[in-house]
Amino acid sequence: MHHPHGLAAGLLAGLLLGAPLAHAQLPPGDGPVTLTGTLTDPTPLPFDESRLASLKLPPGFKISVFAQNLQNVRWLQVAPNGDVYASRRQQGDVLLLRDTNRDGVADERKTVAQNIKWLNGLALHGKRLYMVSDRKVLLADVQPDGSLGLPRVIIDDLPDAGQHPNRTLAIGPDGQLYITVGSTCNSCRETNGESATLLVARPDGSGRSVYARGLRNTLGFGWHPGSGALYGFDHGSDWRGDDQPPEELNRIEKNKDYGWPWCYGERQVDRLQANEPPHTTKADFCPTTEAPALTYTAHAAPIGMVFYTGSQFPADYRHSAFVAMRGSWNRAVPSGYKVVRVRFDAAGKPLAIEDFATGWLVAAPPNAQDPGHSHSVAVHQKVQRPARFGRLAGLAQAPDGSLLVAEDENGVIYRISYEGR
Image (cartoon, rainbow, N blue to C red):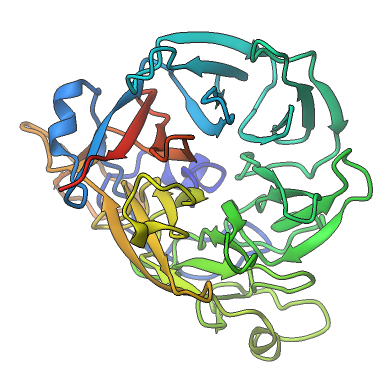
């Protein structure tokens, strides 16, 4: 999932929000085929703290504001002492946020890195902070006061970003550096073998190789604390209808292929992809790919993902994964705009995905009637759009066991805590 651009520049410019798209041609290399889909982008609303009352959580949980007015805040990393590092993509910097009086609200804020265009992912490992932009991985030493030393570039040649410039990264249990690289396109035959993959390298950035491929845009990923298995949530392609393809929770294993752009879901052939895989056919190739561990509603756009290892939440939540669903734009009835929980069994196998924190998507505001616009591929109609007061991004667990949730449209970091029944 991505905001519509590229294809949008010609085909979607001026489309009526909420109108179905038909008889649209994919870019060269992807078609020609007929697409179906709906463009429904909820009306953005400003945030104020009165909106907290509309957010719903399970009994005993509370949501509050840890920090606000942060602009395009994206990824979060929390140090053992509670220092919160937050990337801001549009601003190209990293903020250090502190709650010095331990009241659950950041009362100290400073910029500790800057001038890193398209900065997104962060990974704190010991006394070092890894940062990744569309093309570069940088590393900075954490100083005793929490500030960062001068960042040094350890990788400067990640693939061109295209439609998916947001990279994420983490140091795995094996001590190696893992880096996500999304596809350059919605559904195409990539020319760079590192596009649509998870990469692995030494901690200094050397020795880079493809760990797994066929992953269109996996941003949130991590290792189950019990089993050690690596899981990541992948985005399905757009313009395949309201309910296809599903978002995929994958158990990511070395040298495996997860199907994109030829297959999706339960190894289903993508019949809107006119190209064939190298040296084979989709029909023969798809059964050899990895099926998802679980699937989720199409177009919900999973972003941040974190395994819960704290003790503040009830014991039943331990080793669950929390996932921030950013929210759809390519679906008639919007999906996402929430935090979900992935339940795992005692052996570390994922069982189900359920709502955890909801309510960022709200009913259409008064007088939100869209007047409608004519377009060669859109149905002329009036549509009343729903609204949202946030699009979620990164997640992190604080040392006290609370959960931090970044929202990058209004620039808010929420704090979810458990206070008992």
